[in-house]
Each structure stands twice: as C-alpha cells, then as structure tokens.
Length: 313
Image (cartoon, rainbow, N blue to C red; front, side):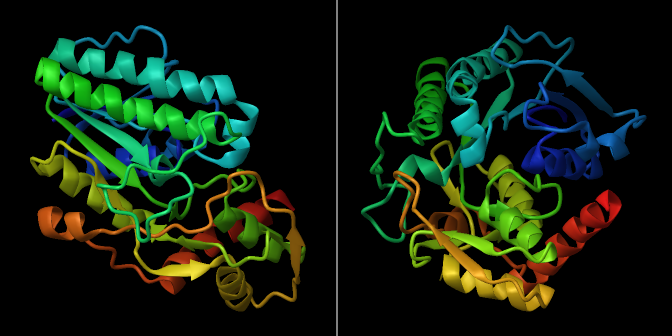
C-alpha cells in the first residue's frame, strides 16, 4: 500500500510510520513540526519507501500518484499544547480533517481518523463505551481539543455517508512510550522526568482521579487491526486497567527508586475525573486487547527518558 500519515513526526504517528514500513508499505509522512519532531523519524531518512513532507494540513494538500490510505494523526495532543495553541488545535481538527478526507475522496483512498477519549469529556458513564455521547464543555479550556475531535468524527462520518468514503475512527485513550515529549504536560513523561531529577511529582487535585495507560506497541497493533477491519464507526482503543493518579505516581517512584515526594496542586478546570475504556467492541470486532503490562511498558519508557536526561547533562 501507499500510505499518507499526517502528524507522522509525532509520538504515535512516528511509531505508525515504523510499523507501516516494516509491513512493506510505502509511507509519506506529513507534519508541520509544531509539536512533532524530525528526531522521531531521523532513523528513517534515506529509506527508499519513506518520504517526509513538512507541511500544514490545514492548507490544500497535494500528493502525486495514488494513495491507498490516509491516516490522519495531525493534532496537538496534550493539555499544554492545546492551551498554548487553541486556534491551531481547532483548525487541524476541522480544516485539517476536511483537507485530509477531501484528499481521500479525490484519490479514492481509505481514511482513518485518530480521534480521542476526550470526545467523552468528563464522563458521566463509566467505563466509556462507543455509544456514550459525552459530557463536554464546548467553551471550557479543554473544549478546543474536545470539540475539534468531535467535529472531526462528524465530518468523517458525513463523508462516509454522502461520498461513500471507506473510513475508520479510532478513539484513542491514554497512550505512552518512547518518543513522548519530556515536557508536554501529560502525566507519564511528567512523573518520569520529575522522578529522574529528584523533584516532587506534581499531582493535581487529590490524586483520586483515574486514568488507564496503553503502551505504544499495543496501540499501534490496535490501529492496524482497525485498518484491516470493515468497521466504519468509532472503536475505543486503550487499556481498560484503571488506576488513580496517586497509585500511578507510586508505581513510577518504585520503578525509578526515587525519593521524590508528591506535591498536590489545584485541579485544572474541566479535568476528567474518570477515564476507562470499554474495549468490548475492539475485542469482538478486531480480536484485540493490550498485552504489555504497565511495569514492562513503563520500564521501556523510563529507559528512553533516562537516555534523554543523560544526554542533556
């Protein structure tokens, strides 16, 4: 296949580039590098079936030749990003998705949207299934990301219904692993880097809010199985093992053998109190569920950040 991956120099996008190349596909990676980095794809330079294009997908996209798939992963994806880049976040979810799926229509290509668990907002249903419509504040500080992704899902399904585009929608829950940015504000890199530096781990609120964490290799496998399926409507991809932020902080401290303490700060506005995917649909349709344990995945991630930390000393 010949595949375009938007946001391909980002965390998940770059791992997807690796996976697709390993499968023997030709990959075009497109990224404007606002939050992505060429460091994530530098090891792919020179490969004959890989091409990188620095480009903003909110503009008209032109690609020569055929395309079989467009995998749309372009978007800021952390609270710090969409607080600092609210307009860009809204534009890439709306205009960027419109341009990307318009290209799919023009090329006769299939289209996968990387959506998010954030479409559920601060959920009133637990765990969250694909049938839940969400509890989102459209004008809250997180609304620019939540609503951008909700719009992206809406336009994806509209193109499927009215233009017969073959689409997939992955609702991605918290994913972690190597190539996350150290200071992007998400809990995994934040706790690991604070512990490595001997600083207090910053926990917002009382730490009893819950999250679930899926290792990157499991997520990439789930995305690929979704691509291979015939399911056009949203599918949750994530790890259903739920834990509190306090519990997670203690796991990180134990694995790093750190003496760091926990520092509690005020909870951000509209921060979700619970987050746990119901992956029944993924199990039934894709025959997929996560395999990598939290300890195994965190050790790999810690080793990645240790190398970054040592190189910066």
